[in-house]
Image (cartoon, rainbow, N blue to C red; front, side):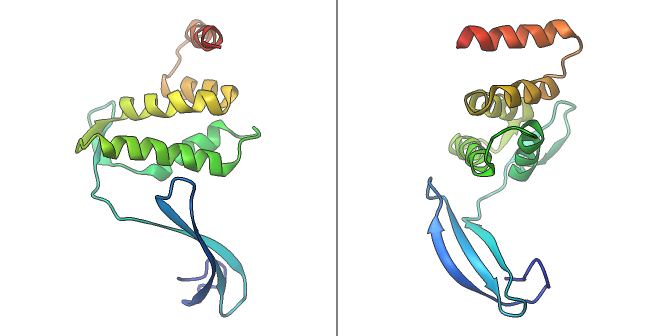
Length: 151
């Protein structure tokens, strides 16, 4: 594994453990050149599936894209990265278990929001406002009221 600090091509594994769901192996590594430590994740390579965007374009599913959106929604919120990674893994696992080769971005967005509202309500509203493209304050208010009635 190439070191992210000095690009040296070799490192040694200090610790390996499965993540909570067991789908990924987390490895703690140390560069043999600069001695910096870093973490890698190893998971089973799966067959790709296609996301159908709102405009009809198709692109390969990218879990990192969902994670980036969640990180943005959770900016300045007390949400650990591990919790967001777990959420993304749950969504991906649910999508893959459906055995569909293509899925709409709408389905993915709803799966993410269904889970995010239990992680952090502020992040949920932020994510929903971008995902659902609220055009005015009324739509925003409706979403807040829906969230409050579910409590």
